[in-house]
Image 1 (tube, rainbow, N blue to C red):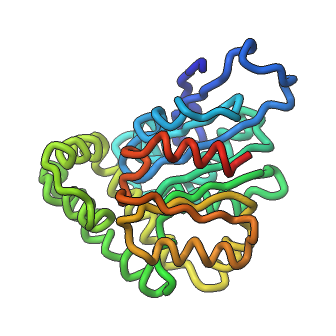
Image 2: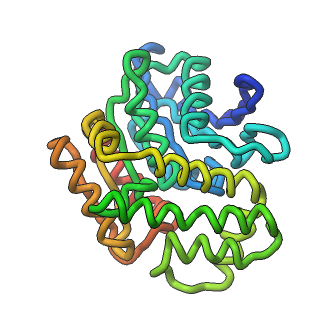
Image 3: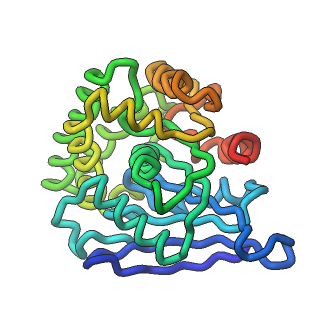
Length: 290
């Protein structure tokens, strides 16, 4: 696939994104019939670092859009990451990119923070955009049968975000985050150090992303939660087998309101599943998002 990197100014913010395109010789589809997919990454690690290995194994899509969400990669709400942003701000910048590219019909996948953004983006997409299929990989907030328990869990992000902002050079604050989202991960000092280095590239942007999830959680009620789920099209939810069982319960709740929703558990992995099982993730995309 051909890979190109772009940046778009959106009302003072800058959104950077990578566009992967199959060469004309790889597809016989007319220009207006291209199949398109947008991939949204998790907190702290930019788009290409999250999705490139998975993209290598995708078979169906002619164009794949991989943006960096605000505060991460090369996307900036402001240049020094001092101003906090919201999930709504992230969605608005993504809608601006989609309008710029004239994408009106596409499939959507999101991981962790990107999963929460995908849910909100899908909910607000109509009537301007049509999302054909959706994939949610351990989306933020959708991690328990009890909404209240999910809120308590996400409120734990606030002190971590504050600690990172006050002392971004302290690796323990980033370990605290990893312990929160991946408590059953295989402890490996080299792997943790790699994760910390990635998260420390934009520490204040990362902290602002955590704050955005917590702020969204405070406003989320059962009515909005049900509205989000009812707007979900056909697709798949993917959960790591070592992750909390509440993540599967949340996906099963989606299945209750969307019968064409498939739930898949990948054994022996936790929240790091997109990095350690890219071929498996790609296979599930190829199978359930077409």
